[in-house]
Image (cartoon, rainbow, N blue to C red; front, side):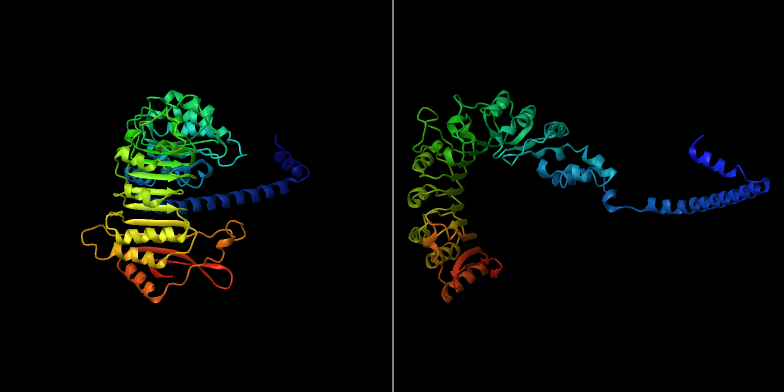
Length: 453
């Protein structure tokens, strides 16, 4: 007998018969009242339930196939660091119907970023199993995998080992290379039939006695980004590439001073249309590389010290041009603007031009002359559609930059302002971030397609 019954029995031991009959009558009356109340609530519940079932939620009335298609179109690369707030696991929490759709839509599990960004943070224990189950749900979908480990490359090997089992589905693959990762992916050679984009970075000082051949047979490969990785370390089908990004040590591919003479001495990229280079030295080998490749580069981005008047004539088909930290001194940029303004055969197809992180004063006169020449009266020739001129704000207390503290931009005169406004009115997407000295600090003034700020 439980304690509640024992306590109730103890309370009745000393009661008389009449008292017990009175207490029993009270209990029966209370039970009857509760049963009546329960019956009333059951009666009241039925029409409410029927009315609720009749309500149609528009989002849930969409056929499952359409909802699945919407989810697929909205697929984004899911970051394992933030997967509870976006992606399929987030949508699966909304309702049971969506959960069923999410777990039965393979394309929603095909884009993953599992990267450790912190140097000291270890690989989460659950990540390898999570990646395994995640990729298993992707079915036969093309996979877009980002396993870049940043400063913590030692943690990348377990994830790369799992990803290698799915190499036949890779469409885009990014990873950080060290000795253990190279061993993990070595077995995928010849098993990347759909790989289109490859992004590789290496830890400082990384080298290998033999070139990495894991990606040497990839018939669909077109886009390659190499960060701090000498091309001599990797075997690729270079000739089929259309997009190439080289960062830091990788410029030896183009035949610069660090070129490894016995490796790819005659590499050519005849189909190259997009070339982006970031190095901290000259690019002496670039013209020879372009001549040898006979490629039509339509987008060129450069972050390096270079003689632009030597390099740019080899980009006569370029449509989009981006300079970052190039030609820091005023007269070089002014001369470049004048050359573009006065020489119709120099960059004749230019339509988008960005000068970013520029240190010295803006040569407004030459800049406006160039913009007007490439925007107005072009007839059938390509017009300049967008232009950005962004000055860099240095740390004014740093010794190297201290001399630039008072190199503020002069305020454009009325004629230049009128020309800029006419360019914007004509449809030119224009942004100019300039510095002007007001007492002591700098401030930023911006012009855009919306007009003067």
